[in-house]
Image 1 (cartoon, rainbow, N blue to C red):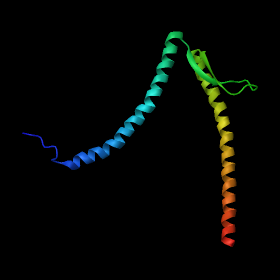
Image 2: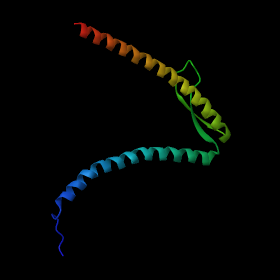
Image 3: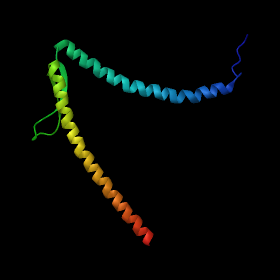
Length: 121
């Protein structure tokens, strides 16, 4: 039997339409997973070769600009350092959140004033 290419052209159209979001989703997943896998492979390679865990932390020196430092630490110290850095970063994010809330409240107050002025006019 000879195959007819035009037997159900609607299925070809549906497949073409569904393939666009599917290909986008697969590209997104691979685009996110590939860098994470590469970083994990590098960390495991360093750990395998040196026996120590690579750890990123912010520089403590106030006179210099902020930068990340890479340190090799023992396995048991990594968890303690992680908790300390987490607390420091959460404190910075907390102050940033408070600033954002204040700015949002100020802009809402200004918008309410502008709306009141428009209603009066």
